[in-house]
Image (cartoon, rainbow over the protein chains, first blue to last red):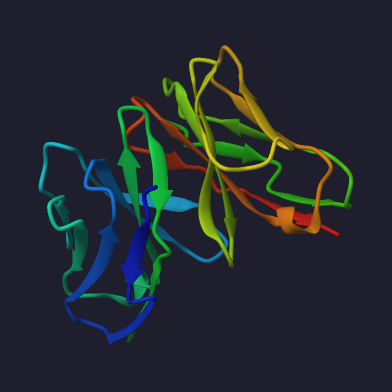
Length: 112
Length: 111
């Protein structure tokens, strides 16, 4: 059974800082990994998807990497802004048809 | 292109009742997945439909069921509601079953 862990559970940083969020998974047969952000009481917004054959993806100030051998993915946020404050979730899909397991999330607060 | 829509957005039911939630995927997407989100358990996968067929199912009791129509719209039904079913129910659609796009969710409160 796939288990996905995110550390830390909460993080508070001053505006402008670069930061890394971690996601660990137990099943190295992971097919792809997707990062989301969730604002309070809202649905999830897709940030980045790393597919099976890829190792990283970049979008603007965000960069996500995937290392299947070590069972880890990281989300790097450059020059953090108060608008980045949200809960960040990683989700791993196993198998051709996606049975997706979500991590527990990291609640990020960027202080102006 | 319109995003994923879910109706209703908020719902209050009493124990023992049943409820039906609706999800309309992004146009052209044939895969619809449902999730339950609670503070204690986080996001848990309920089931996934593709072209009207259930392809995957999570570990939820039989009180939770779903279906998908020929236009890819999906409904989720919960029968004999329990207090523990209070949660945010999220629907996600996908073109290929890989990258998922989420709706705003339905907040269900069971009293």
